[in-house]
View (cartoon, rainbow, N blue to C red):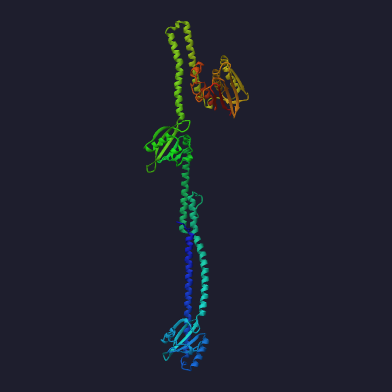
Length: 589
């Protein structure tokens, strides 16, 4: 339905009423004036006719020519046509025409009325003059007896012209009044509708949430009450909107900042909301999933199954699922039914926790326990075995006893090395906080030389040359003892896995604000599938060769933790048969 502004509802109504009133008044005035004019003219003619009748009383019996002459004189003096009619209706005298040529007037209405003793009035066209005339006839009395009639007449031409002139003036006045009335109606309508339009515009601002400007209060009592009510309502709405906005912002901040992934779905499994953590876990954009089916946006059958279980169950459900992607992250999911204010099921809320690291730590812990048990069991078993052999009588054979004791000493030394490395690794982990161990701005070249010197005996025994290249100006805030231990472990590995006559290069420098240490060998290299785990405790690429070379399996793990304690990182590049390159980066700031 088409809506019409209040102004265009009020203005036409006022205009029609005002114009109708003006027109009605003008018509009524014109008709009243016309009636008044006719009544006045009739009264004048009546008076003249009576005066003529009194004047002619007693003179009608005189000669007809004298009577006609007398009537002519009276008509000219009164500017009125005078006609004297006998009792039978014959014309005895007329001021404008020859009586002899005039027809009997007994059938004239005004004459008939006058002959009956009453004043007769008639309006009609005169056959003599060919114009509308107003006739008034009065009875002529002789001794109280009607003996004829005297008629006075005037043409209506002048009166009609005057009435038409008056009518035109009234029409012009009515038109001017109508224009004035239209202007006044428009002003009044505008004055009445403007406050309402202001209220309407203000209500529209309130609807858009613009509460900063109050509505003007009109002078009209009813509109003033309405404006004040709207202003009070706007103030309350503004306060409530601010509160709701603040709460919503807080909830969104909490929702977005949660480490847990949260997904809310409706009963039709369409996404209602998803936070950033869930989007990162499931590799989707949270801002583009609202209103879309969960199966459409999330490529994880486990998450779909969890949502279906949560929608069907009356209580919480839990299930571990796999996130989409090549990294195969593990997510611990918990689904809870979502209910509306009436307690009806409205959907479900899924909470996802990334437990990939936890599962990895559990695996590392299991592997560590198994590895350390295995590593400790080997020398302990050997020591026990050879000790029991000596106790069984082999101690009598001095040469055999010496050999057994030498083996026991070797395994005890290995056991001691493992324990020392474990204790050192534990101490490094505990002191990983920079405030727990002192660091000083140290020249990297001196640390590298000390590390090479600590492994010089090993390199000479294996016939491997260790070279150093480092600018003396390169410094970094480090613990010299810890960093030397890490570099020595890298050199130790490089020497052990290099062929006799090979060369191990140790380099120091700086790049991108870091102090960089590189240990490069040309040994057997590391297969690609092992590169991701070589820094784990007790992890060995070649277990047999590692034990044969006297390694504990903790050297690279110690390197990793020392470098991390300095806020740096260690990387490896290797290829089978092409050697390995270990790169340590330590921030200089």
